[in-house]
Image (cartoon, rainbow, N blue to C red; front, top):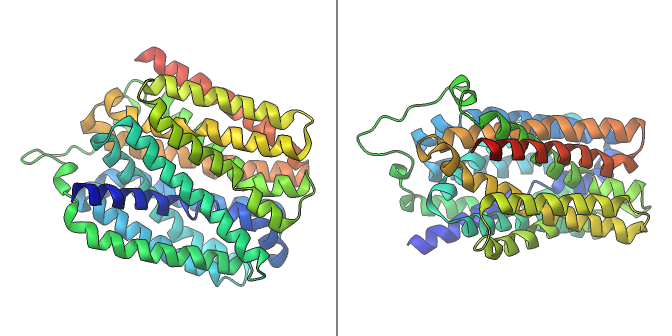
Length: 382
C-alpha cells in the first residue's frame, strides 16, 4: 500500500505539469484566432498566478483541515473542469473566466504535495517526483502540437489534457484511504497557524521568498514565450514551434531524473548552485549567434539547470525552518513563486510586443542574477 501511494503521488505530480505548458505552446495559434496582441497571453497567466497566490497563502489551513489527499483530489478535479472550459472558449474573455478556478486549484495542491514529500521522502525522491512534473510539462506541448498538426485545433489539445486529468482524479479518489491526516498534524497537539507577519520575521524567510519569485519567473517566462521566440525570432512555423517549445521542459525532466542520482552525492545547496550555473550557460548559448541550433540548445540547458533548483529548495525547507513550520513556509514560498509568475511573464509580453522578443535571453539573465544573489544571502544566514 505504501508503494501504491508513492505511485499515486508520482501521477499527481504528472497531473500538475500537464497543463502548465499548454498556454505557451498554443498561444501563437490562439492569439490569431481571437485577434488579440501577443502580449495578452500575459493577462491569462496573470489571472492564473493570482489565484494560485491566494490558494497558496491559505494552504496551511486547508491542508490541516482536509489532509493532503483530499486537497490533491479536489484540486485536480477543479483543474480538469477548468481545462474543459478552456477547450470550449470561443472568445478571449472566456479564457480569463476559466483561468480563475484553474489558478485557485493549482496553489493548494502544489503546496500540500510539496510539503508532504519534503517531510516523508528523501531529496532524490523529491527530484524524481518533480521529474514527473517535467514529464507532464513535456507531454503537454507535444499533445498540443499533435492537435495542431492534425488540424484539430488548440481546443482539442486542451480537451485531451482535461480527459487525462479526469482519469487522474478518479485514481486519487480511490487512493484517499491511504492518506493519513495525522501526517500533517500530531495527535493531541494544536497546530499553530502562522500569520504572514510571523513568517516574515523568521530568519531567511524573505530571502527564500525572493529566490522563489525569481526561480518561477525564469521557469515560466521561458516556458510561456519559448514558442513565440522560435516563431518570431527564428522564423519557425507555429505548429513546429509548439512541438519544439517542449525542449525546455524535456531538459528539465531529464535534469530532474539525473538530479535524483546526483543528490546522493551532493547536498541541497550544492545542487542549487549547480543548477544555477547551468541556467547561466544556457542563456549564454542563446545569446551567441548560433541560429536555431543555439536557441534549441539554450532552451534545453536552461531547463536542465532549472531541474534541481525547485525540488532542492523545497526539500531543504523543513531542515532550514523546522518541520512544524514547513507547511506555512512552503505556502508562502509558493505564493512568492507565483507572484513571480504573475508579474514577470506578462512584463516580458509587453517588452516583446513593444520592442522585440529577441530580448528574452537578456531578460532571463537579469532574473537569474537576482535569484543567485538571494540564495547566497540565505546560505550565509544558515
